[in-house]
Amino acid sequence: MALDQSFTGRTYPPTEPYEVGREKIREFAVAIGDANPAYTDPAAARALGHPDVIAPPTFVFSITFAAAEMVTQDPKLGLDYSRVVHGDQKFRYSRPVVAGDVLTVTSVIESVKSMAGNDILDIRGDVHDAAGEHVVTAYTKLVARAPEEDK
Image 1 (cartoon, rainbow, N blue to C red):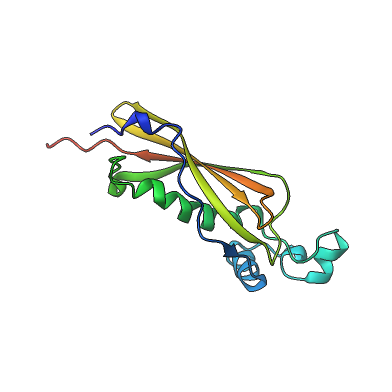
Image 2 (cartoon, helix red, strand yellow):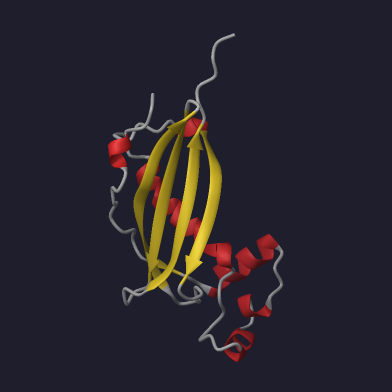
């Protein structure tokens, strides 16, 4: 069953605030194998002009993808998540994520398309800090594969 294309433009409520911790940033940097000292050493980050350690660019995926669950779990949209693959991911930053940031994410469905029997869902996640300032926007493309035909 095709997704409801009238959902294009739908905005979901902001997430609960997420406080970015130094240890979470360090763990993420280790997990992706990035030894940049700005991710683990406050002095190195300050030398680069940041108030504390900064997060690797893809760190926000964990909170924006969790926020996108409001979209993917919306029963009215009609998405069969068991058939979903991650199609694409992009980030547009206003500034780096810094340890101590308190972030919220607002998810917006940018488009709903059907192509060759597959449903394609584009979700934008706007990330703001506690002062309401924009930090980063994440663009996530999900593809719900068409059901396989009986053989």
